[in-house]
Amino acid sequence: MAIERTLVLIKPDGMQRHLAGLSIDRLDNTHLDMVGAKVVSVTEELAHKHYALLEGHGVFADKEQYQQLINFIKGDYHGVSYRRVIALVYKGENAVKGIRAAVGVTNPEEASPDTIRGAFGRICRKFGYFENVVHASGNPEEAEREIGIWFKPEEIV
Ligand code: ADP
Image (tube, rainbow, N blue to C red; front, top):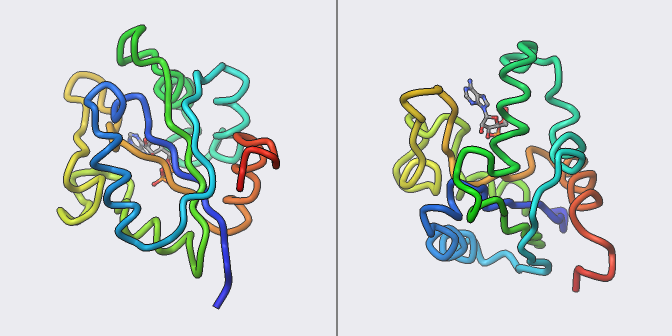
């Protein structure tokens, strides 16, 4: 049983649709502990750092798809008032798996309805990107890398 930390982002689609509260409610229901939280305006540089490992892989082998991913997290598709995310750190036993279970799989149409993405996510009909409301780290190593990008050590209790 490992005590882990994991990063969650309420993405700009979640901010625009005022789903932050409902999402955090479900994250809190895991009974993991919230140890970091802030609203962040995402720069191009921060977006690239966050998604560095996806560049050139899978669907993101396509440069346009990758740029769309970057633009999405910056809030370019959700209006100037919603160019922001909430960054959260949760901590506890097997936190990465626990949070991923509450979040659901990547494609909101395939995500179980009792997950955040399954309940609130959708696919943008016009451009095909997933409006899946939240990001959650995929494994403990990734989680620590991502927390280091989004938070200074003193910002986490
Ligand atoms: P996850 O966020 O579930 O860890 P990935 O790291 O693979 O998934 O992808 C990062 C983000 O890229 C996803 O959350 C989603 O917003 C977007 N994405 C991934 N795959 C696709 C796809 N096939 N079509 C549209 N958007 C995608």
